[in-house]
Image 1 (tube, rainbow, N blue to C red):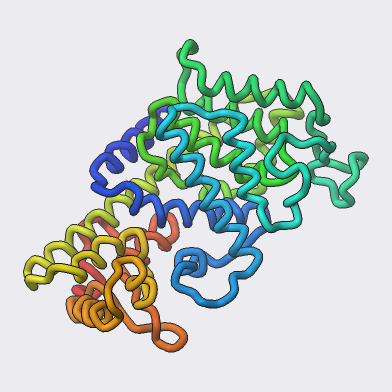
Image 2: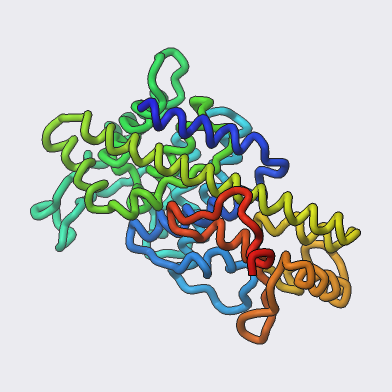
Length: 356
């Protein structure tokens, strides 16, 4: 537990240095969205998720579902940041956004389920299910309400890691929605840490670690139900939080270092105006296009083109790349976001262009 708590404290400290947390939240949230969706069998490449705003092509149904998660999580983060609380209504809203436009967008979307469900059933029937959650009805609604009340309680002194592990298991066991319980359950972990005051900014990405250990993750949850033994699950969960927080903190440090280096390059070159404006948003949008930037800054295309050419000459951007040579990429930011765990460049490592 101590290691996980220390890792969360380091991440919180790193996030406190971020001048524009909303910008940094964008790439970390999209990385989480891609991984938490993949864990549930909905796969869209991370490159597509990060570059969705720069594409004119019709989005795949998988990508739409991943982006639904981005929107749902943003709603939750903003609500908790403003209110300091989690409610059942908030989770219902998130679930409704999450399943919007999918096969699960049924009459139960956006509310606690009214039909029974079976988990781990090859046929969908209760008879051969690995686990059958509580049936729908008044008791289920009361149980999820009790869980949320316990999460936001200030009267109980508790270790935040243990509390989040218990709550995550209980949420998954209740399985309160017709779809999206795994994704919302992992989102609830971060919301829980925000409510407990452990994280001021929701930058933690927990799903990549659990995705890499999907079978073990599912087996631990099932084992609690089968044996009533909590310790193995809590230790596993704490290990995942420690690793995830450490990895996220390293990415945040690298992203902030890259951004500072961009500022230095622009100052040395005497570049101002829209060039600086574009450079400032790259930490949140490492892939950009001329149309995207003209809309964002209200500048004419020739002005934006000239700014992009200058940023390329300074080694901040590379491009144009991709179909019709339309996109420009901040390769150091892209690398910091997409690098596998343990492969993020050190904080003060040279920029890719400087090391070329």
